[in-house]
Image (cartoon, rainbow, N blue to C red; front, side):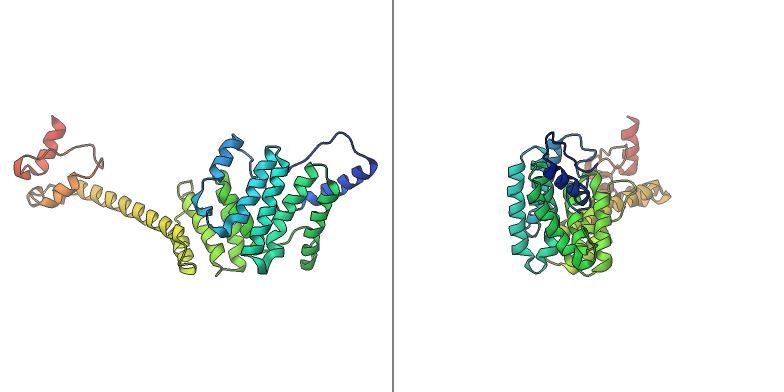
Length: 296
């Protein structure tokens, strides 16, 4: 549900301003219209999860983080602190994305408008609505535009929130990549989202997105770690399945295999099977030793 506010006393002028803002605010693409805390059990848990995701420690994500913190501060009723976070977000955008500052600032300006609205400072809220409108009109739209940068910002925001936002984050990144498929920033987003969703039904194999992200941005160490972890998990699962099939096959019961040292390695794997192996001196017991240990 989008944000709303109820103030008990308005002058006729403020009532008119509020009514004119109501419609335009709902059209803005920003944290206040993205329903980020929908379904959350606790704002404390939400904040703790948001603030402890390692993939967002790089400087390029500082503006994203400041915007999320501004929204959290607002939800806690700390409106002045929220404005401070938004000011920091603007500074990071100017520093990291000076060539795209207008488009990259649309989310921050939308958040500004909402915070001022909730403070009852309608004229200041209108200033930021007008800033958004001025940029959007360049793309023949009054309050929102279809832009890969905007899709990417929403994607990173939802990815930062985690939980039930991961699937929607992946959709945002996919929209961005349809327009700019070779953009390194856009490709790392769906790769991380796919990695997280790999543990959720329906399972999604993140190997190809992770490899593509590394190809476009070889310096992204975090994505490299995720790929390594996924490949390690695949290898372990594959080894377990191969050993399981082998132990169930007839060849596992041949005299030659019973006396082989390869069997020792297989039997020492942790908890792949219900039996345990207790070899005698010189490990000459073979598979028969395993059977006896189960029968005891």
